[in-house]
Amino acid sequence: MGNFFSFRTMVSNTAIKIVYVLGVIGITLAGGTLAAEARDNGTLIFLGIFVLGQIVWRLLCEAWILFFSMHEQLVHIRAGLNQDTSAPISVSNTAPSCAQCGNPLPKGADFCGICGKPAK
Ligand SMILES: [Zn+2]
Image (cartoon, rainbow, N blue to C red; front, side):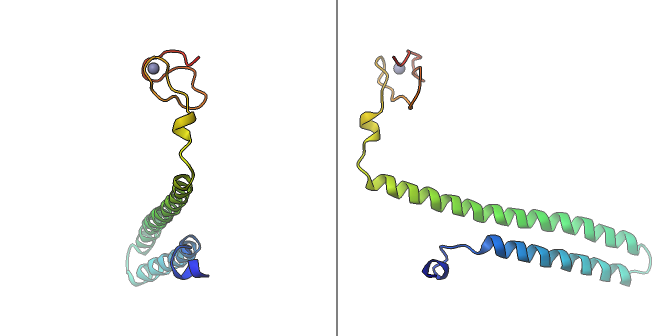
């Protein structure tokens, strides 16, 4: 609950889905109202507002969700980084390095990425 009020827990994904459905209903109603008020071309106006509106609204909501999911990913990454910094630095000490140029080798690497010498 503390996380909720400090905005660390994002309600956005659920909220955006609800807002999206409300928007779809609103766009449909607005398109229908404007089309009903138009004397000619009512069907065209409705289709234009409906199709364009739904596409634009969908894209907006997707961008919104994407933005917040990026935030969530960053929070996870930061949490992971915080764990790593509290642990003793052992990766660089135990990681193998190239015998020829000293380039640190990623785990499971067969060849040095810098000079191409086989790791073993
Ligand atoms: Zn090397």
